[in-house]
Length: 427
Image 1: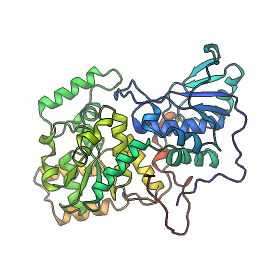
Image 2: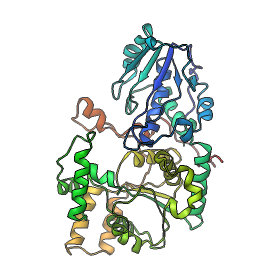
Image 3: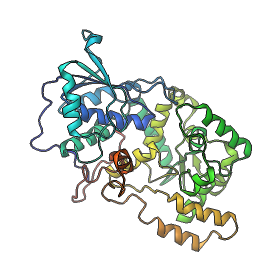
Image 4: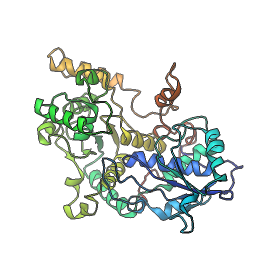
């Protein structure tokens, strides 16, 4: 059960030493995690947090402001006993009083209390140039970890218009019965970035390579798609997702919500999934053009709708472990360990290849094998995984399970079952 209340020794925010500005980076879920970490960092360095700026320059090219995506007033009020949050920096603060700082990734208390807090002697404003993964996953005081959870799961609500639309989509999905949210990472940018071309035509594979070569932010250009896939680094294709769900025993009349952007190749790659599971729904099929129009040109807001429908689903299954998959998994764990299926892509690829080669048929053997191998990959309670043995430096931190993927044990406790409101929809 969630347990995010601070300890008896926790005090109201002490006198502010200055202002923390934060310019978030990445897509919606990367920004969410970064915002919550900035709340905790502001507490650690005794700063007044200025409502963070959202990333408008990345691939997403979204002009949304904080208040377009999140409930700004609720965010400020919900954190009143933790951190002072203001909407704008006071006008009298001059540029000479500001410092831009790239906080070190996965840093702990000592770094912020010593190196960063020492900057208050010379500056009134510290601007965090990036916000992703700036705070350690582990070895932080319990009250700081609980604050991260209060920020992420209680203070950082979506804006009222997004919550209302999300509730509408959830209600319409539920009208068909219990549903799966399938986070189908088969968009053009995902395939170009990962170098995954299985089941694509030579023309499509070449187009994706040209996109990757043209993007300066993607450092790795030469990728062996077969090697990527064999190591489990590729998202499941729509066809593979269909075979996997069938093997797990989900019947063909299961309602499935497709939480994704535009699927690369459209209907040409969705045929197998559509034929096995005809009840495929998307935002665009559940809501009218007029209902979705306010969100249409804002990818962060559209992603927020997918996030709500995914967190509220009966089963969530991502075909790739990206930022949204990890964020939704963590939120579902926080709300009571709702079923979240994590496909073992590396193992599944070998089975899929045998099916393609005619060495294995779909049926009882495949189903038993898939069910047994995924028995412990469905979101059941467990403590957050630490670093991989033998890793050092940043690789050690990178190998850890991220805090927001699994907030156990920091924000979840054993307790007697009772009726909890485990919905993220407040309206």
